[in-house]
Length: 307
Image 1 (tube, one colour):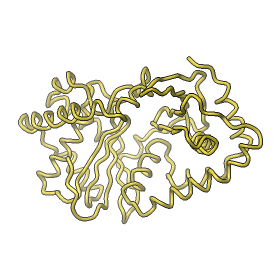
Image 2 (cartoon, one colour):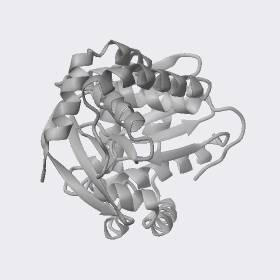
Image 3 (cartoon, rainbow, N blue to C red):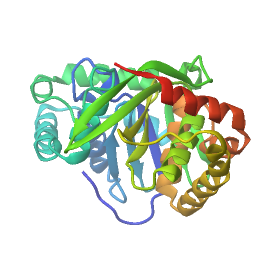
Image 4 (cartoon, rainbow, N blue to C red):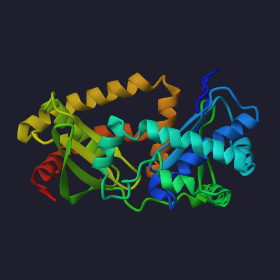
């Protein structure tokens, strides 16, 4: 559900998402109900939203934290509205469940806590009740709620409930997985911790393999480095030569989105929710990563066994 009119000034992050659900799709359904409630309160300019594995994002023309909390507390869930929004979510699932991105990332995250699609599960969605939504809303209100606005930057409600991650150093898991998708084989390596160094390593590998598909998929509790199977990992002097160019390209990409409030806000919200660090600071810290650490990481990636 989207209405784009006027200027976007506020982006909201609500913890939730498909990795944290008992009933698959309740986060996605709550996103729809939240936006429907905004319409009922005559907030109709620049309204949009989406759900991911770890959170719900709501984009609003302009709102402050106090009004946001009031709107969330006062969401009315009536059976007629619930049925209407369920139908919209079910139609969205039918429309998107076979998309390239949906099918690809289903394979990437298979057998992990992120294996469930943010779209939801049809049978679970049909059985979600008003009571389920009320309990989900109370869970949202009892946790941290994040707002990023043009004028005030980041605001956090219930900050004490935002728990520390308990780790900072990246840890590569001991096994990697081979997946097959659209006539291509990919190798997926899973990591825990703040993934700045894996992000930089992926750029170094991309420069060394300009025709290969290489990307990092980042979640709150896990990240995945995805590479086509024939990708070569650079070694020795090649790594040292590629580090400056990789950092330059990352900085150019960041400069390219600094005037896009939507992208900046989402990056800042996700970064603070995941790591309690500003996104801009994390980008700056890439330049201070020790070259020996990068060489060590790339050697690890080369030597990890397939599961």
